[in-house]
Image (cartoon, rainbow, N blue to C red; front, side):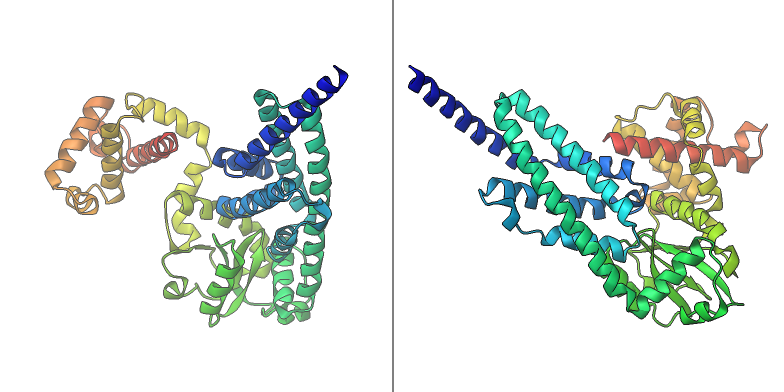
Amino acid sequence: MAAAQTDGRARTQQDGRELLASLLKDLGDDEAVIREIIEEARVHSPDVAKLSVEENRRHVTVMLRAGLAALLGGERVEVGDFSDAARLGAHRAAQGISITALLRGVHAGRGRITEIAIDRARAAGVPAEVTLEALVAVNKYAGMLERHVISGYHSAELELAWTARDTRQQVLRQIMCGEELSGEDLVRGGLQPQGLYHWVLSDVTDLSRARSLEQRLAHDLGVYGFVDGRLAGLVSRLPDRDAVGGEVLMVASPPVPLGQVSELHPLVGSALETGRRLGLHGVHEMARLAGQTALFAQPALAELLVHSLLGELNPEDEFHRQLASTALAYLDHGHRVDHAATALHVHPNTVRYRLGRLSEITGAPLDPTASGSRPAVVEAMRWWWALHTWLEGAVRRA
């Protein structure tokens, strides 16, 4: 009987291991899990959150699947392939992300995937001892993975320290942080101490794309490098729009002395986020995005305005979304029905009909001259802000 019980327990554990292996394999292909890990890393590491979600997703997906493959492959974790971990460390060093911020994101993602795995194993009925056995292996692998991330980071730091590129990046980061540099240091970094420079920030976070863009902008009078995980630069004239191309977004400050750059950095960053939300590409001056940037900095007020003006619209109703998109195009094109119709590829009468229906549903006129009590520009601003916020929310729900 004892032998039978032992055999039964062995079969139960073996079944549990097979079930757990299946669960772990599914984790690596589960987009919802990957999104949760990314969100956890971005919440706990603001520097990592400055990178694009796509950049985070690429590394999380590669490392998660590599780790699960090592655990499921039956090999000792010591002989696993940790090249992706070392590459992650090297990339973050080149992007100017601190090792502390990097590890904070790694730890947060590691903790979240562990919680998810435990919850799913428990729900599937995997024996506790089998789950514990797997967790021991996971922790051992995670420790080795972390050491390779650190090793890759420090190796890249040493390599960068001997390059002229690193000198320029270091100067950029010091200026952005408000540090005082000698004239000799500035000249060594490719800058003139008394010069006036535009602080330029891009949405490029991928190293290969950044190097390609830098090469296209080589004739600009200034220097480029990674700051806070994005390609940034100090240039004496605005970047060439043709060289930047139509897939990259760059926002530039007015020309200022080097001592004022650190004050403008957060403003340029906010304007860059505004440009991203508006779907812009190419080179844009920060001052031209000032109004939208100021509005987007007040999300709570935006929601109140949406409720006030557009509370009768249903985000799940395709016709209502069509009405809102038409109204926004109408405002974006200077209240010109013909221009809005051209942009939307519809007849002008279609635009007029949709604007009329929107006014009927909301109970408020979109025409800024109809309200009478407010200046037209203020009324137009209220509608533009409400429509843009409402449409963003509708897209997220879709």
